[in-house]
Image (cartoon, rainbow, N blue to C red; front, side, top):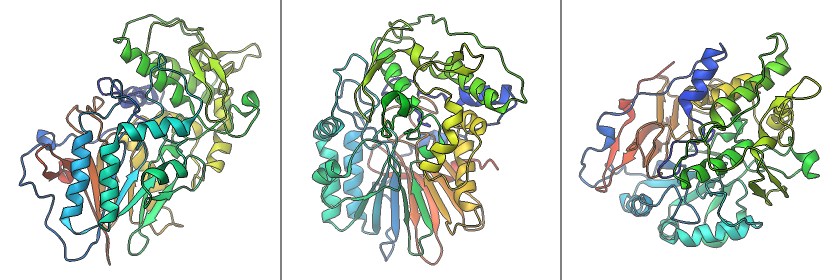
Length: 448
């Protein structure tokens, strides 16, 4: 979330319920999440994923694997061998055409502030690969067996370059349509769209605009989510201390001033949800964010990123992401957002499942300029399934991290199964620890 930043044992960075509650209180949005599947999808199976079709017409989509550089703080350690086993099982099924990894494959964001600073993202990701070698061995085996393996970039690995992955998985197909973004169109009729979906999230979408004057270049890329992900990981590493932070106080402006209302809503989300839930043992103005990647070269504090009332009576952060609301339209243009989203709607919606389902409809399924019938997103860590009843589907494939604390700790290892042909169909599955898979599609209540 949009990144739902979740370490192995701490609540996600955004807090879907918190963001949605804020938006609803201010009369700005209404969010909801789908119901949880009965028994957490953990029913014992027969160690067969599904009955094989005669033709290889299945496209499997996973995302939010979050394999890290160190097992001491990575989000996906316990479930790593289960993912490798899952890939090997896909080879044996015999009707899998493609395996699509839809973002947040590797993780450069979930790193404590106390971890040694790095200046070379390529070297960082090569070490991530080495730390998770069994996964890469399984993926190479799948490609050798004839499965097309595709990678679509996410926000936690938005600086991961093609050459680094190509070294580790030579046969991998990589999809990018803008810097730090990608959408994969596939299926017999090109009827399926798969993307991480962070381009619709102001806090997670690549941002080459907001800090370009500060950094002196157009390659800054990192959005605010990077900074509070680092803050949250440090807080968790320190045992989640309960410190009190004196955030600046700002009064709500006149509602007719859309620009300042946008700035105010951003301020409320930052100071009521995103920053305040993480209170490590650092000072508010202490320079803790060593940032020497993705066009940035500085050391920053929470003070530098936190909006407040400026001397000119406008609301803005003093250093990073100044006048954040004013750069959103340009960022959407750069990031190839097909149907533009108002800033207030975007910042109040990005914590919940409903907003992303709405974006699947707006950008694809109900867009008259689109022929897409199936949309698969990741990013939220909230599994979601919606069958429109007329041959159109939206699926959020959830996550594979060790504990999905924002929804249900056991609601992990979920994935989408898309069947292509003259007509397409979609399902949401969970991979069980006994090697079976459970179809959990019908466990969800559609929220229209």
